[in-house]
Image 1 (cartoon, rainbow, N blue to C red):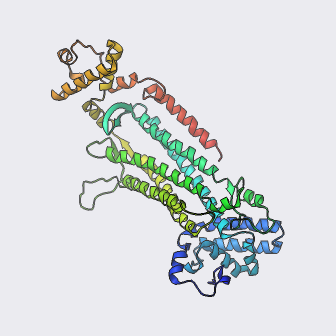
Image 2 (image 1 turned 30 degrees about the vertical axis):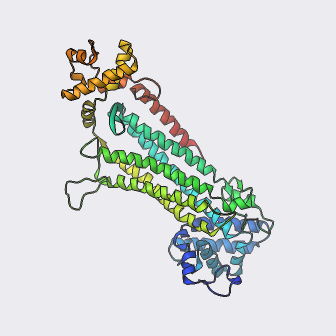
Image 3 (image 1 turned 180 degrees about the horizontal axis):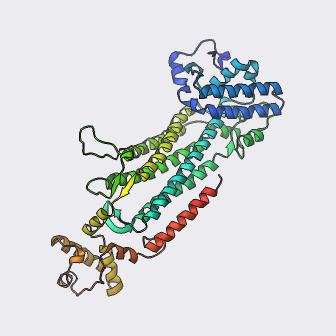
Length: 467
């Protein structure tokens, strides 16, 4: 392949080796080749419609671009740092194949709008793939919640045992977090509705072209209304990175739970061999490495968001070469989100819950102390602060005497509260506590069943929605 740069006419000396090393992006932007060829085909069809290309030139360009796509897919086209980027590789290879007609393809466009449309297309394709994975993940959470509508679980605050909840209620909490990610994903897709192709370098081309045609051909709603904004805008990438960070924050929080709950000290969860690893020195170990790695990848996506924010913050309008770096962050985050969503699915498919261990810890953790305070308010008419103090004193008394709340006798209550206290039979069972919870969105079994039905309706609606 010829080694002259597309802009060589203005220069008499070649770029230094260090300059070429700094300038090249082919080492990472080669992944745009399908988007670049797709956009080039749409551009060529529009140029032919406007009379800038002849029918025979269009046919040669179409055939040449399809051949190049096949060559890259099959690994037959070698890449060179001297040719900088994927756009140059494709254009020069096209000229090799079809001659001067290949040089006409760049009429009425610049690499500025070319890379913008390529990344728009690439992000849109990634989002649609993420959407499919998110829907599958949400389906999995619903399936697990349906299976565990009667399974006991522990709700924590400050990583201290707080109250009994249903495992379905806990799982649905993550369903709704990922559900909001899906809503933001659709918002991000909408931010990609404008097509930058045809904006040229920044002021528009010196040719009468049809930007509406290429926009429609490529699946956009319309061209960008402003050609400067078309080449300078990276808001859609900011939206993507924030989405990636949000998804990974939720993945990381779930993985943190699982890492803790699968430890010997907790023992609420057992992970299968498919998502755990052993130790190179300690034979007994079953390490939650996949969950730990996903937790670590959250930091990586956070870094990519901060990198783009820092890259953009001082750039003057319109296009600057700094923006070449945006693809490094973008491509990495896209790959990590794909791995993250599928990795979490693997964990959910190989997880086993241990309700007996949960019940044991609930009894040790005085998780029904709030129920006791509420009983004193409701049945004895005490102010909540006074009831809270009595319940706290009961916990302290039980701890000092190596008892549980359900073990306290009438004499104990007289000493603690200063009056006789008769509690209903079975008051201190987790199941009775669950049934005392009230209202929409609570962990009461009926409310959880209602919530599960609502989650199913929302998921079905999302499946039917065509972004």
